[in-house]
Image (cartoon, rainbow, N blue to C red):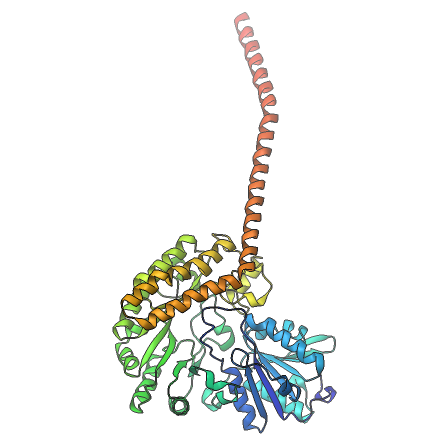
Length: 522
């Protein structure tokens, strides 16, 4: 057992700094900054307990290291591509102080050993509201056993200890609202995030949501959501609301109840959300979405390859996707299509067909992402066991870089088709011109921005692309050399076998001659 009495410097935690690390590189969504809600929610919990909280989202504001130096504890929340930045932050903090650092978020929840080895004092795994608070309370009191805190990982002697997992929060309504005002520069956000549920009953092979939040939907009370929405809309009336749920329309009855109350109260500020294609099957829901000013729906379409959809366990067809786009447009709702390409069922033609489908179907905006094996997913476990992941830099696990060996093409070919050609085809110069000629100025502006961003991304990632290209050429040369070697071996074997075959044939002829002579003598 590791007693808190043995932990120096943790008494009386009065100030906590929370940090969301910057996403690596530059991509088409860099312009649309949106904080995750984990830290604002933890911040609200701590403020209720009288603790001073500062939150820094690096995409929005620089970290004030003077504030960090005066903190009694630092918490960092990280997803897989921001993990290297998080570890660098730990190194900088530890270089000048012994401030305890706590890491949380999806990445370290599945790779707690890595986070502790990188210098974190503690790792909060899974949903961290209760675990984080219990840790701070025990550290402040200087008494109790760390082993009593469920969901916590920490240093124990020369090794690491992982306490049993904590049950997920059952009553989301009991949690305080995330306090976005604790984020330095929060007023710069053009989109306001709001979450009404956690969990997802679907089991998409490449997704870590079910591992992190479970396969059962948990919903906040509708009146609680409405009350928060009223405050957010009053504070920033000209902002778009983004419902952060992994599937906002998962329970149509629950969603319709919320939308009816929004309509009754006049809460018709522009909003958008994520959903599945079957959302269009409920026409009452579609009418409510239109009436409450839904402007954009993010559809997880993933692929138009039936074999890939089956492999992903997506439970939808290409016709379902096509119909969803048509119906949403009938209700004046824009469609953002989210594709994941590069499964073992995909080849170069699949990707080109996907771009063609996206353009012909009328999808307004797209993201063509590379299948990414994130820790906590079945895809990660599978590719790891097969030795197909060849990149160990987590910053490349962003959906924009190929980090594994595809089944039907080389990593370079996949990178070239998705990261460069697919996006360029969809957001082409001709497409920009066509939108302008149709007086669709907003769409034209988005296309021009996307086209420019793709060019910039290519420039910033030219070394990575070059490495993949050289790797591809080396593999092709090695393959050619291997084929040539096998061919030469075959030729050598044939040359050695010819004399032996000739000798055998000659012997047979002599034997036949002898037999013929003996027969005549008789």
